[in-house]
Image 1: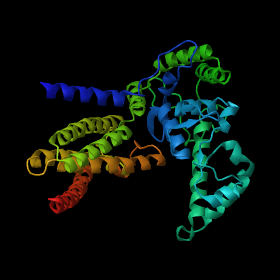
Image 2: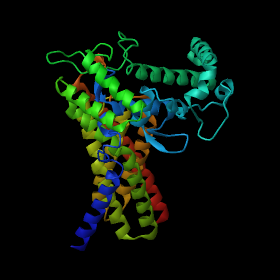
Image 3: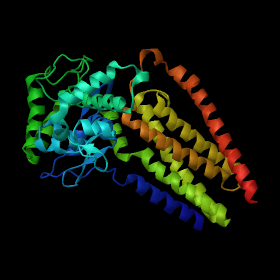
Image 4: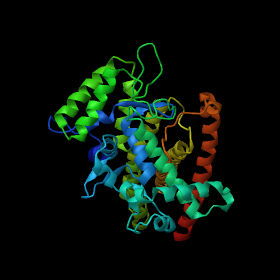
Amino acid sequence: MRRMVFNLLCGLLVLLFFWSGSHAPKDAQDQFNLPAFARLPIKDEGRIKPIDTVARNLLKTLSGRQSCKTEDGDKRSATEWLLDLVSDRPEALNDRVVKIENADVLSMLELEDRKGRRYSFNEISPNWDALISAAQAARFRTASDRDAYDHQLIKLTDALSEYRRVISAFHSAENQNADHLPRLIPPQEGSEEWLLLGECDDSTRSTFMALLEAYQAQDAARFNQALSEYEKLLQSRSAPLRNVRLEEFYNRLNIFIKSVGLYLFVFLLSCFGWLSRKDRLLQCAQLFLWLAFIPHTLGIVVRMILSGYPPITNLYSSVVFVGWGGVAAGLIIERRTREKLPGTGCLIGSVVGFITLLIAHSMAGDGDTIEQMSAILNSRFWLAVHVVTISLGYIAALVAGLLGVITILAGSFS
């Protein structure tokens, strides 16, 4: 009974850990309803997603982070940052969100080498022409002739081009026929074509623009009213809102990053359990490995629902799946070897889960991780059978290698 109560308390503690920071604040008339704006649908790169996802992906591309800080040091969400930009608030151009890692590029742009190496658009703009010229010269060089300076120039200008592409979608007069722009307006009943802001009817366009104008004026009541009217307009169109809301909640939950912390905790518990030879620590490690594995699994399931495909569709999802398989193997090994080598499976599972999710996090800055599949790969059977089978081979090799290392270490300490 005591053990059951302890397990339940640990489960509640982990639930609170994952829930923290994920709940949307309650609506208030004197506050901007940013969560509702974050849930608005947009079609970009062939996929329907919430504005929150577009904002997060853009901010990750520019700065490697999903949030930013104002000049005063206040933390802001990606959605709030994007809303500042698209509503033409001048303060947004002073936010330090552009990461420049190469010292030579900083020198060319006449920027100081500060901690974090993040800079604002206003700091970069005086030397914009020099940046474009240098980047064009870098692109003319062959890949083998490019150095770190060239790669940083290309990466920086690509990120700034992505910024201009996304921002243009929120201005009704710009690039109305550009196929590469995100599309804000869902199709009418009987149609499948999403529209740019400049292509829709006057009523829809004026309602959305009123929303941006209210935010620019920092009028929360008018913003919330315009947002409510726009949501009613969406209901008259064939907008698939269920998955959009699910994805916005998935973004706020941030499952995989929080799982990294749990896997690290399991690793430390396992190490202390081995060194102190205390079974209770190893039992706790196994419990918390399960408590990390469950949300890891749920994260993969949600991604499958959102994409409509099997778990592996790109390199990011492959790394996440390999990590999941390694943790599952660790749990099986722990159950099989807990009499002779207790803690072995927990060590394997925690190491694989921690490392793979960290690697996946580093890949998230390349853009949308739930991307639309290209035609040549658009086969659910091939993805479910061939790709998953190959990944199972990666899992087996990774787990076998770690099991061998741990067995050797255990023998040397015995």
